[in-house]
Length: 313
Image (cartoon, rainbow, N blue to C red):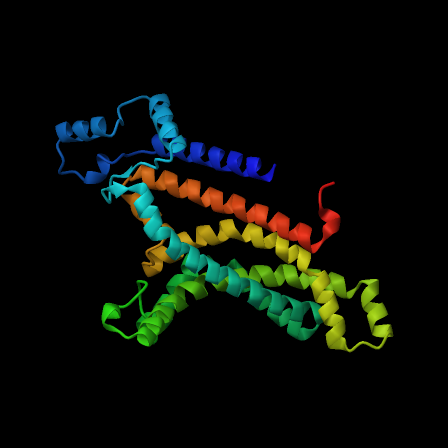
């Protein structure tokens, strides 16, 4: 059932993306600039089948998609599958690191807040996290870039590796990659930490008010042991929000990758939009929808494992 729902979501998102892209002003011939003659523009439109009706183009695109053919990148002059195979691992690595840092950091901060709910330190931390949550990822990325790359010059400006990467030793190569990872990872993780911390704090606060906490204290358990039990009970909302964070991570990664020239899916998508390279954009939407559906299904499975009472009969 979950698999069928995921397929339906991906298909609906792909169809909507195709229709909106076809209705958007401009096409690959327009993206070539003003110096192209009308005759050449007409030849390009005919070559790519852009003169056909929307129904014909949709049928051709859908048939290619069913056969596993994602099309040809008109901007990079190679198969779309090759573009995705180069960009996807880099985005997955960045988003995986960001999700891990956000999850661990948010859970620790939120559990610490929930155990001290209402205190002065909790109010200060909550205010700071609220401000952090309100910041767009691209604005935060530009701020970090300006401070740590341009002014302080502590970290690289853009890219995934330095120019001398191929001439470095193994240890230097690892350090170079880590230095290039710091700013994009921080830009994505800080907002994620604020989200997880908020959910974890509320869940921890509710858990600390339960009767089993009072019973544990009456039995003479230490406060740290009591908080560990309350924390385990407060994991369910965090598990649920983990799957819902994937769409936000994907959206944030698009802008963060563009700011730092991180050669992932977000960077490839923006480049494709600027060049009217619609096959790449469509494939990116399909891939993003599939990752989102997979994340939601994975969160449901993890939630059922964490609390068997939620399993469907």
